[in-house]
Length: 304
Image: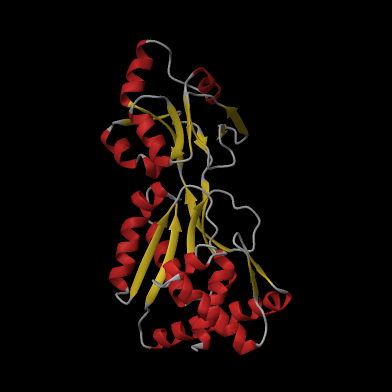
């Protein structure tokens, strides 16, 4: 029995709650994964998991063993990373998560440049606009936009995301022929607005007044979505007005296809964080990727 592999397999089975998920990760079979865990149990002389047709649960011995096993697996991974750093090289898989729009429009070129700088590294890029459990999905580092909920994850703030109130050129043209365009935030209540639901603020849009105070406007509209790419498409289709990160529309703003509204009102930027599970925070690949991304985004027009 490869004891380290068996420990790694056991840790991932507990984290994912599934033998089949780990089998897919290892490009193996569910039976082979089960045999690794069973061999570890025989070696330890203790039952670690109870299995039913619907769920897995740690035994008392399993709970005590799991935390030590997870720490040891992380330490071995870090030791290997330190050795590779000594050889001026990083290697292996780095699992990165981000939202779909940010991943496609901002993160993608920096992933490519990181791979070019570290040819020994391979990146598994997971794009999802909803909540993703980093431990369950084996993610090493995630890029998250917005205020973070309290958690056991380790976070590093690497900047802020600029936002703007935007509408398509066609919407602006039609509004100028009829209803006036918004001149102050309160006017947004008279316009159809597109709401992005993955932020806590949702349809409550915040602005800073010229004297520095804050005003919040609760908007309404015919469409809300949890996907930024749908927000972009809806704006282009003239469905309504959006309050959005400027990176989502930067190319269209530059060509004039999308117009920035309320330019004299300051919009509230969103914090940009890198987050990792505690056992991955010191991994060489995670640190290197974090430094690479922080440096790259320092010159991003949509960040501040």
